[in-house]
Length: 261
Image 1: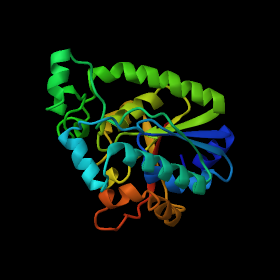
Image 2: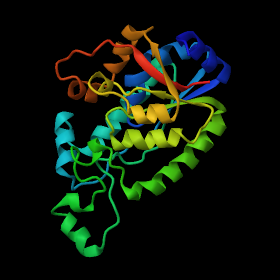
Image 3: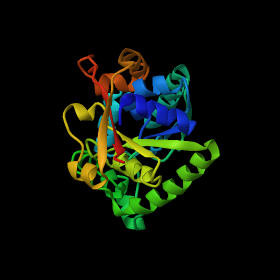
């Protein structure tokens, strides 16, 4: 599919729904295309994993808070909500935060003795105790399987309420579990789902070729409006320094994957 055909399809859909794993991912990966689509379509961004959790936090979560120069998780996520709402308002898109806890903060049900021990060793009570060996490895916990079903039902209701004719979701470059779970939610819209390549992770990694092949997906590049996208990305003040420590944001075409005819 050509870029022009992609825009035409979105315009015909009327309302376009973007599923964002976190409070910046949709703009990071799709900000340029979204800037074009708002001219002809209603654009709604649904952010799935947009909440923190109470302390004590795992070492991975504490490291993330330090990277964001945050004094606490609740305060950070309150600021992230405000940032996302402001960026999407400037963009001309609507937003909805589902407030499911981020993988860094999701807990699992454990017996009382383990829960007490978890006050000292938080990793024991968290569904994803580490970033490097759990969250970043694409190892979706069995405990999240029910979560996918609940999210699919919830997002389906939202899609019906806004009459979404086209749904974008991440293809999962980088294999962050929250991105893979959001992809699974998008799979619940056969015939009207398109996938976006996860930026900035796609600058050093590639999509899962087996997934692309199995779903008969064809890539489509979009390079109009990239300067505008950079402005929007900088609106995520709590995240931009951690994501781009050199201060430079790569100017790269956005890539989308759509089912072949």
